[in-house]
Length: 436
Image 1 (cartoon, rainbow, N blue to C red):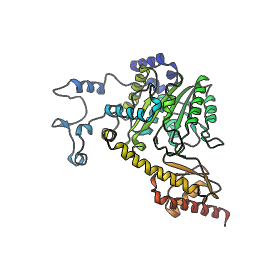
Image 2: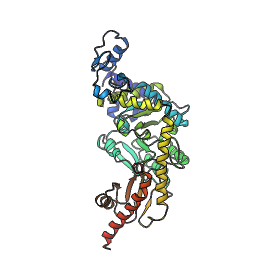
Image 3: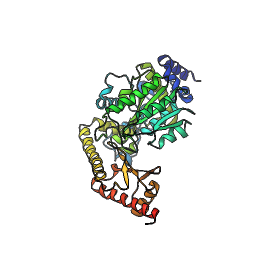
Image 4: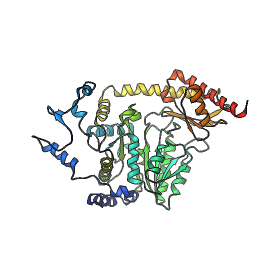
């Protein structure tokens, strides 16, 4: 094993042996080179005042070389903020700005010890880093039975982890913290579990309330006290889009510092929060009371980034930073939030009107981009195909009964037509099945 990796492992084990115990084989082996192209280039950038012949970019006239046909569409930005490589950890000013945003929007983080957010190539990349550092063959990844399908690819297929599902809702259609607790305690023999907490949830659009957050936290603490080392990951892809009575913060604030056996990890980003899906700017943040442990985890994270994408795109980091620093940012974001909330409320108004209750119910939703119908008789895949082939409408079938609808991308005046058409498609499928 490389001496740098060994040194990081020794630091982690000294500061918290439970965190060392949850590292995967790759997590133990990875490190960020201190003596290499990037470190030597960084040193030269600080000291080489005459000529800097270290980094693989081209310069012209004292700035990064660029094509006019590209720069003319980006003339508001300095070429140095677009064309040079961003540091592997991301643009320092952006990391600072995002941390300030996290503190402002999550008062429960006040007084908690957590690291500087590290820039990722959006949220999937952040989750992939978690998988690389902590997931190995047979490790349990605990997720609700209504989940984003990419978890299976990221943790199961790529890293060989075992996906353990529990029901998202209990009988009262609230978050099933008892089932989460049971799933975590079932890993006692393994002594390790990775739990993914995605609120607002994809696909249902559900965010628990404050009491449910307390129950989730208690379930994770119970597992830790029973001897399970827990990597507790908050997938906050849709953070901030809370439309009704629900928790208004990330669960990360409650998980940070919860127990020595719990490593809290926050994965979030500008992708959905700032409506910049194609920019691919995300963040990964660790919580720990130990600054040395946080530094070691950052170094290992940078090793993963260096070994995969080297660094994230610089232009989009600059664009996001510009937005966060703009005096118009908050007002413009509030405007879009109001539109999204209006769509969600209109969907709920339609669903609660009683006009569709003979063919479906719906899972509780109060946030995010999506909601899920639960079809009473018709097969969800058949309805999906009918909608697509006959009516030119796209939805997502999940299992036999569930149909996910992204109201986020349907303007409010068209929502009634959308759900009326889904209703008609259900009737078509039911009629064909019964021969009526």
